[in-house]
Image 1 (cartoon, one colour):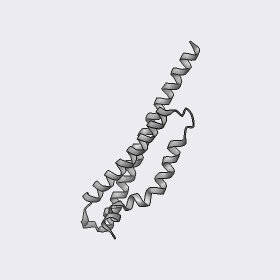
Image 2 (cartoon, one colour):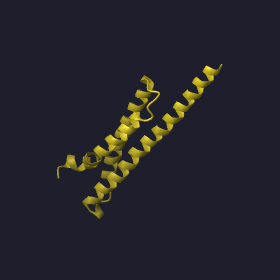
Image 3 (cartoon, helix red, strand yellow):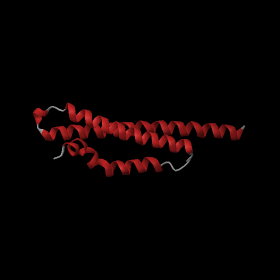
Image 4 (cartoon, helix red, strand yellow):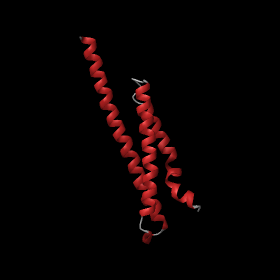
Length: 112
């Protein structure tokens, strides 16, 4: 196997699943959808992808080769997937808090 493919195998295998999770993150909730929200979502998705790639490279380089070559792939994939989900989960939580705060402010201004 090519060294480039070997290091990026986790990304190659998880790319379809990451596209599905990214699309769901981008599409829901449907409203409000402004430039700030799109910027936040894009930043979160890029951050999750970058964190995934960096963590996979770190895990691949630090896996104990005593367990075999496949262990490097298993370890790197597990770490990378966890990091991707953690970053996306944190962004989802932050976005929810931010949108709720905006909604409360807009309701307060309407009632005043």
